[in-house]
Length: 240
Ligand code: F3S
Image 1 (cartoon, rainbow, N blue to C red):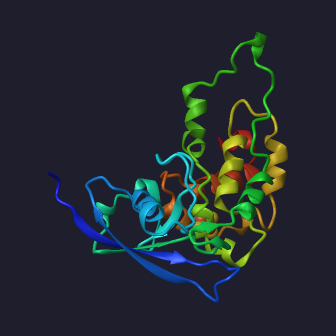
Image 2 (cartoon, rainbow, N blue to C red):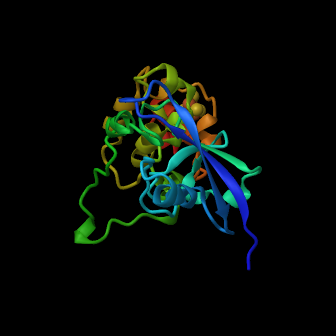
């Protein structure tokens, strides 16, 4: 039988409607091989404290709902094995710099509002002769990385410019803009570039790289932002 060890999850608790301030509650449990932080939190919810609030859906690193601050790092709770975390205490908090609704649930509305501002959809010409609108492997490779964004909000939460400039579009929205501007099938690139060509758009980024370090999908938002800047300065086609 696999050996079990005990771990205590120190979980951020705060209900702004009733609590004077936040606190951490301790929950001790046996950890089996392969158990994730998400499973630990669900164990708390099922067995130890039914009032814990958290957000999750797919449990396989696709939906981006369980982005949290775990032992001082940005992580997806469903992709973080308790076994891999050092020590007997694991600190679990909500995404920093986002308004807390309750416990581990933050208000994502301002984040999605920013994403919505960059036309995050494909404006495509109709496909030739009613067939699929194909891309060459080379055309697709330009957007391969940006397509993987799961909109978890981690890069946005980690960027110091979003902390101080509430109107900054932020790394996720700008990466999304790049994803469609650079898509060979898209015809609305000029409109989208106009939307990000502002003080609170691509020009607000200070190349801090927190977003690159924090992204759980290994996407490089700084590269995407730099590409958009290049397109604005030298033109879209030349910069490809
Ligand atoms: Fe922020 Fe990333 Fe730029 S952390 S300042 S968007 S490089």
